[in-house]
Length: 390
Ligand code: SF4
Ligand code: SF4
Image 1 (cartoon, rainbow, N blue to C red):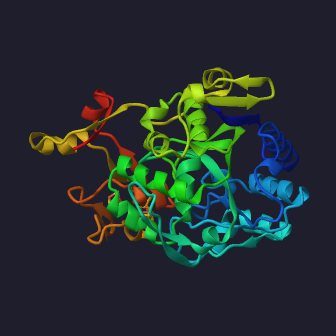
Image 2: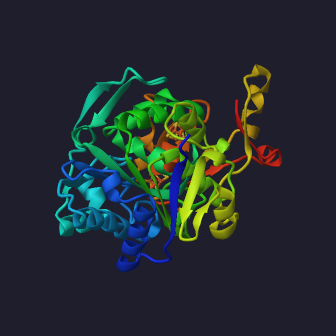
């Protein structure tokens, strides 16, 4: 069986020349861009545009990485390029978010147009094992192939967000919230994400890990230098290498586990070659050489308790989002982000939670622009180093 290949290239800065050169090296290690896309194809560049945030905050794909990808394709003779993503909060339009992240200016300079992420169509995906209905942005449906340009970050629901989770941006606008309401835990959500990846099938995945995000990601975490880009045709293998580099067991990431099970890619170390300047290495080798095991990501286990008798202990065991009043500006974005019909958060001066109905999807935490929501694990649960879901 052919192994999945993940190219790891070192890059310590966002200076354009160095990013260009690192990207070229990575593509060369994968066998060249011509082996992935043909020249007449319409190719979508899909960065992470979670929210309007300056590049140095490490919330979104850095414009220098986006530019390097656009330039490399254009210089190789690919003319039919466009770009975009469906942000977490689509109100105000994709262009506004892309501009706030520095991506639009770069795209304008390269004359790469924004695709249609402001409308979508319902598709029936019969092959879906968990989800057969998606409303997908027209830009995704219009293209022949996708370059998924994701960001190396932590995520409160799935622990990490990398290549696999980045394709959630294919879902049109506010329909993303409906999926959070339907798939209320990390595992069921990951099954839907696996189906979605099988439907959209990005052909090339490029991870911006030059400056990554640790801690309270995917929007409110801390930027941290990881000094690398990862590239692969297999998003699960790519995310698995990311896990190895930060000392996280890849099996604890539901998008990896379900992605492997649903045939999106592989998370088995013996099925993954890491391609580097020094030749082919294992995940273990590159983790020791380039990894950071102090990277702030949750590494404990998960416990799903169905026992009714434990219900009264829920507040002592289950993690929950908490408002940091000193940072909150009472903008209400968290309330708008809650996907439940009967919202589990309301603005009463400061936002207040109804933890009895909250499904712990963390959309509110994900979308708070002020880093004013943290996900806290109660002391008792921390003692057992477990994530409890009761
Ligand atoms: S989104 Fe953040 S800053 Fe705005 S009200 Fe909610 S917690 Fe406060
Ligand atoms: S309050 Fe926050 S974590 Fe709870 S269901 Fe709403 S968005 Fe999800």
